[in-house]
Length: 230
Ligand SMILES: C[S@@+](CC[C@H](N)C(=O)[O-])C[C@H]1O[C@@H](n2cnc3c(N)ncnc32)[C@H](O)[C@@H]1O
Image (cartoon, rainbow, N blue to C red; front, side):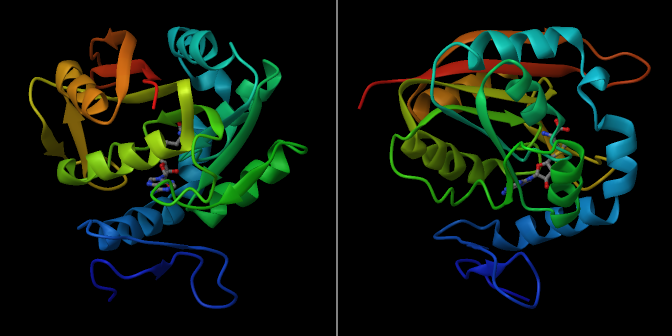
């Protein structure tokens, strides 16, 4: 079992495709746990959530409104089956999907030929400083233990250009707390607390939306935020 601070070969044995690190975080083991949990449920996840038709129209509109507005590369981090990367490409965005689950990346490449996807971790983006115009992290930060969120947002801030936009989707709640997500433990966040974390990392909220829970889904939230100048 790897210990915190050690690189983990998320591609498993065989040729090392990438490793993620990482530094002082406590979540190195958590990432492997999350990857393995999604890998085990990849087919079911794809069936339930794997097309942009299964995404709420308000969410698609928010994503397009904030990420299809300027030239430059956009990263869909934790892209899962890759449907939102495909959606962004359909809007003319130079989008790349990145996920740490090989099953998702293989599915995305087959389903969206011509769209770039790669195996990787959002904790170590392997891109030059301030080279990315926008980042989508759609329900991909939900499994991060709250103390680890700042480090990941700092990596986003390193990668994104001043004025670039970050869009995040997550589970809404009255307080930061863990809950039993079907795949693996996740955390809900009050919008204002998530927004404060973004501000601490150098992102200014420009819009948020919330959708109350109902019989089929938990309360949901999304924030669009712009990177401050360096
Ligand atoms: C709830 S799913 C969301 C997938 C997709 N964005 C969607 O909207 O359907 C969370 C995704 O985040 C990915 N993920 C979590 N942590 C990651 C990390 N550190 N690097 C890359 N992907 C990550 C998981 O593998 C999973 O595909």
